[in-house]
Amino acid sequence: MVLKWDASRSWNIAHFTWDGVQVSSTLSQIRAGLASRLRTITGLTVYPYPVDNISEVPCLVVANLSGDFVSTFSGAGFSGEIRLVLLTGSATSEESWAALDVFLQAQGTSSVNATIDGDTSLGGLNDVTATIIRFENAGRREVGDPPALWVGADFILRIEQGG
Image 1 (cartoon, one colour):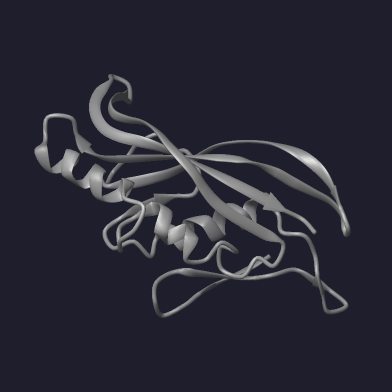
Image 2 (cartoon, rainbow, N blue to C red; image 1 turned 180 degrees about the vertical axis):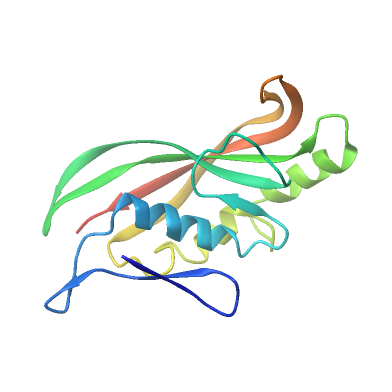
């Protein structure tokens, strides 16, 4: 995988090929593609991996992965879910609650769902299909050590890789 920085201040993924044939996308490429796609939402900070400290909100963290290995035409693939954790700000801030509602909408320029639906290949990963299947745990939550109260939600993203 080769990552190239472009003028729009984002990473573009150049895929592995072998004799001109695309090799299966890696989980690292999927994380990078997902983060790049979600960064198209104005004002949203995206962390492709869990971090110890959140420095900017609103933010979205590509958190836990779970899945199964599957047989595909080209060999093996991956079918699973990725948990995306959205934090919009302090639980005592009315703006944090309003921002949460905007990110949870099914449509719109700040909709996490619509952003993924706009490019389910996550930037041209030929063997990947990504779909938000639900959001959950929308509301107040404790984050950090010592814990602070934040407003947030979890998105469950379905990934099919291989083929």
